[in-house]
Image (spheres, rainbow, N blue to C red):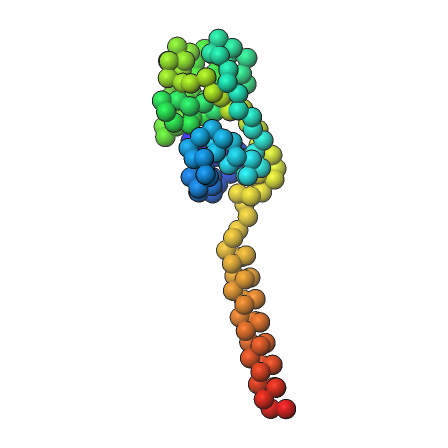
Length: 145
């Protein structure tokens, strides 16, 4: 699934944290809500396998009980779970459910990955220190006068 995170420009750690803390985890609703939270447009469909030829070249499916990125290339599919697996159409159909997630990334989701929380945390720490010192100065001035 690392390819999935990189294709959507989302943080793996953030995705897993949000997904696993969702009240409906590990449902498709939790998966979709997590993508929504990370500003990734997505829709979940129940599609009969005879109609899977109409799906885009990349989509998500439940493959062998795990969410997986599926990439269609010619007559084969590449399935990305914890490892990359090249499978035939029959193998894919035999090991998946009829639920698919169609997705597209957007620029806002991409910017979430690049936000550096370290600087935000430093800002908070220095703000607290500044106001603590300011408060102490006020108390000292008040005692003097």
